[in-house]
Amino acid sequence: MSGLTVLFDLDGTLTDSRAGITGSLRHALDRLGRPCPDDEVLATFIGPPLRGTLATLLDTGDPSLIETALAHYRARYDEVGLFENRVYDGVPEMLEGTARLAGPLFVATAKLQHAATRIVTHFDLARHFAGIYGAEPGGRFDRKTDLLAHLLEERVIRAETSIMVGDRESDIAAARIHGIRSIGALWGFGSERELADAGADRLCASPRALPACFREVAR
Image (cartoon, rainbow, N blue to C red; front, side, top):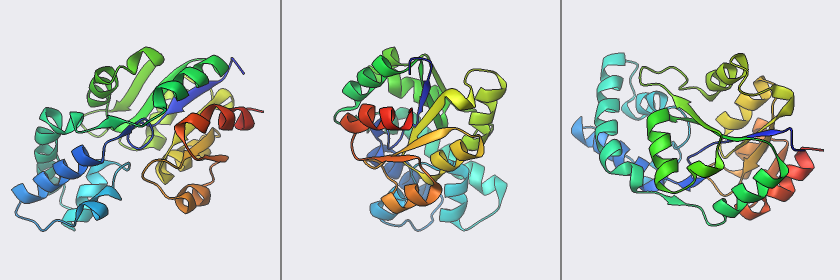
């Protein structure tokens, strides 16, 4: 199994980012004078690309309004929200155990790459990863499908020797589109039904159980 590559989503898979993201979404809507749902509703939007989330919350297709909201979101998130965050219990052990079984580990997130790098570094997780990949400021690679396509085109990964670990439908669906095996992280923001319906090859209950789940998927 040492030739296998493992891709990890960030929000809801490595870290519980609920407070920082919901606080920054609330800030963006408040700055625009728009009503905001409660934190439980906001948390259901964690994972998918922010532009789509803001379009839904604002009930708009106006690109200018969406970009203005995104600027408000990022102003707060980059200063405060990044660190309103915590590493899930068992994640360092999960990464160490997976590294013993597989080849390189990567982060593959819809979050901006520079923000993901700051988070992974701040929480002392960067040492586990051969690379951290995410979206670009103009919207390139907002969709996990596009990010994985890029990694395949650049030969960073190979579909047949890679496994995606993530907590939302977008992680699992992107992996399936590209012929990559996947593990649904049940400790994150997505439900068991969401991950199963998306076609995860295996569902995993906790970070500490991931190495065992990895062995099953890698057979």
